[in-house]
Length: 182
Image (cartoon, rainbow, N blue to C red; front, side, top):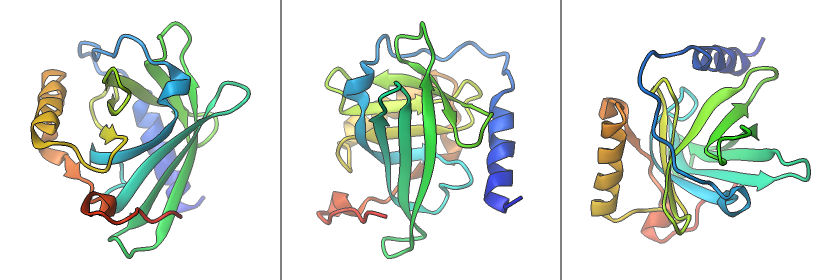
């Protein structure tokens, strides 16, 4: 088995374990069609595949069957690094008001994916996991004002996240350049 597939299986299997912690607070309602589109990854407690991600963008597209086709694109190691992309399929959990998904990279495993925060304008979101091992702060723009970012970090801490592993994701578009597409 390829190393990437093996690592994905380990990551997904770990996501199936329970934590014994209080459940994450979730956003009340996610209008799934409105959530679709591009989200710049501003900061993350990264998976092993994201530790060298630059210009990271998560793209969501609702397919005709109601699944969320997901593409995570990035440059590996720098703005001039090779373009990479990972593909997954999201399954919105019934009865969760759109806030709980299973994200499937490799069949039959689904990783935990929870919309912890979503602003009313659908411009900023925080995606977490019950285990509080990975985290993504994303926005429709490549940068956030410092005060807004700090309040998002406070929300994550309040939910039990240890932010010592948080990585700011460099975005060339934040400096005025268009992000590279894979």
